[in-house]
Length: 391
Image 1: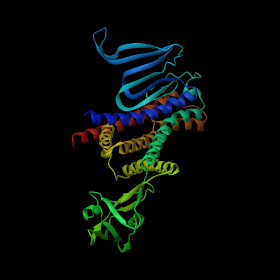
Image 2: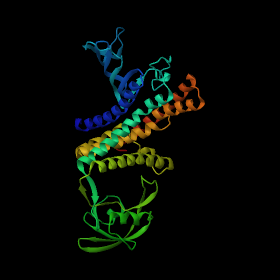
Image 3: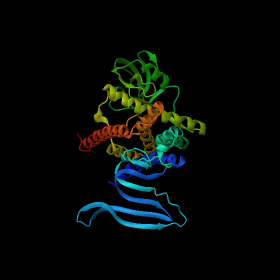
């Protein structure tokens, strides 16, 4: 159980922490007071508060109040002395609900729906709109950088895959796909498709582009015997082009070769872009009905994937972390009230009309966004619970 939970905590915690660290660093860079830095939501588990000459530490749990009620509150407090410390009064805490995190800064209408804005110099709303947008976008920027650094680092460490030239040797025929159903297996060599000679993986891709959900003749070499079969292709959306292409479900035989720093950076960039393209493709499929909202997953699904990839080693685990980081960055930049993109959208509108929206309008927009987010969270949690019980 612990071996399954720890990878999930590490993955989600790292991605969320980096996101919120971006907001925190951006706030400090423009002179905005950070009131709270929280990893996760809900009731606090423990908190460190920066005060004059040290730190205040509090541990939270259920406790008995003076009137006899049982309530969540501090059960242990301690002061850690650090003479000369000015103290920013920022509270750094870990909360109970592992669904994200947040940085609360002075003078911002955020998820807390706090209406106390007095336009003091250290408040966000007193800063110029470019500085506000810099703060709001910093989490997305940090998640993008995290994905890029992981992909680049893994390429430098592990090298890059290179398809073996001169033939189309199969490394794997994926179960449930046409090639597997046709009996093609590891080590077989694809010779031709619909009469087109296949000498490389690139030839295979080019030949399959327009063969979408149709019967084709495939000739392949298996155990020194030439086999000819008629199979029906499948289709999928290419994440890079957004167009449908024919699919056999074959992975080519590859070898790993060293990658230079420049190549690693280039591949890191390409894989980060690919991660964003995957999210875009998923949203398009949901909108068109090609995919169901029942396929959406939340923390439980991410936790399950984290546990499985952790068993396979650091490379699959870190690759998953990079993809989740791309997901978080993309979803947060969408112009939905309550998300970073929603805040940026409102700030941009204010810049266009050259006046701030009224607090009443901001509150209404924010509350609408929170309802949408709660509906989405409920959907993914129901899907996660359904998967947990096998439905």
